Length: 350
Image (cartoon, rainbow, N blue to C red):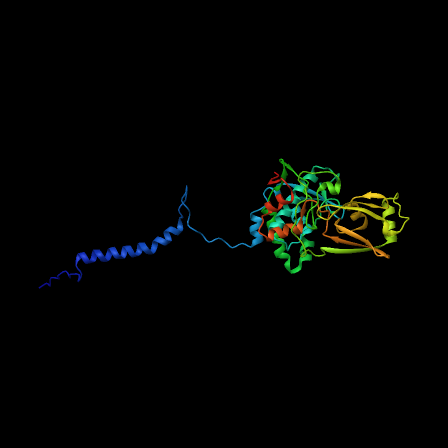
């Protein structure tokens, strides 16, 4: 007799089985969904914003290089270096070396930017002047602008080399292509170290008035190294230097009578005087006797001349220490430049 097998019934009813299956399917879908979305990221257009992504970290110097000097890097400067060689640099490379040489890298960044703009504008003028037959500009500050190589600057800065190099990199990059214009044209962007309370009108130094090189207040003071300096010279030293340059000077009388009729500007700069009967400007006397500025007084004590000098430089245009003081007060590089260069604008040169 055969045995009939009966179908065994599942302990769960059909409705329960469907619910379990649905739950399992949902679990699998939730597990796989992140993997699917990683494989193909969505495209974003219009005003929709993509999801925030974590950027690869970069150093400040890398960020400055990435942001930078698209305009300046497209310009070439032919530099006559101190060894007498003509080297070709991009404007960005050249300006880095000028700012490093001309202004202390410890200065405020807005002051460094002002210096970069002034140096860029000065370079453009020199490029069109044909002062040097084979070069645009030289590295002699007595003729053009000072320049220092990156290697020399970094060796001089020692442990501060990284920080200072990055500051100057940013100053050049963040003023890319910008210069100082008067009536739409680049200016003679003269600059100097420190003033005796006011800058000097160009007419007082060179005898020619320039609309944007007027005397203005300058805020630097006792924080400037060697702001007040002294020079002592014997009568024989003054006689020799004067007669070498001005053979017609009459220095036969007492030394206390050699300097006469001293005239000064509002800023205290000597505008003119008589030396042995020869009329000279304060700037000429400054160069003749190697004084730090033309803001000086002179006394004869019976044995030697004593020159008390305030500030450093010719005094025309932008004071570098004054620019730094203004930057400390919160002024931007544009405000600094348009203060020292009267009625000018800061705009792209190219």
